Image 1: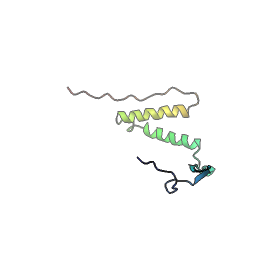
Image 2: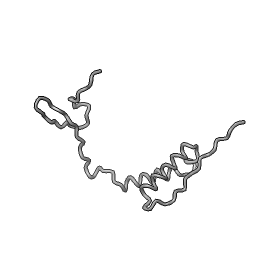
Image 3: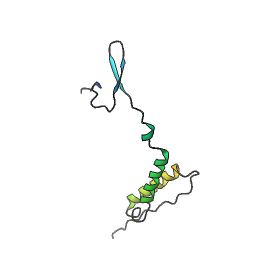
Image 4: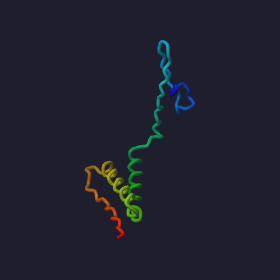
Amino acid sequence: MKTRKHTETKECWCKPKVVSYKKSTKYTYTKKPIPKYKRYTMKQRIADLKSCKDTQCSKGNWDNDNYMTGMANGLLLAWNIIAEPYGAEINYFNCKKKKVKS
């Protein structure tokens, strides 16, 4: 099995930084810093999480099936960890029990 050398720049999203040694050249790829006007702030993240939580916890979404109930409970947990200052009590949704055919 051949290993691929990282000498091509076509596959990388940034320019390689060349570090030279005595007999060989090593390429290391560096990530460019994101400008301040393009950064995703914590306030924006909290606002997005709140809109996702509100959508998922609305009637018709969380009570659709057990998977959607789990998604709503996970968003409630994430909201409690990130946005609630003192970790308030969470009122989780209960899953539906499947009816067993007899």
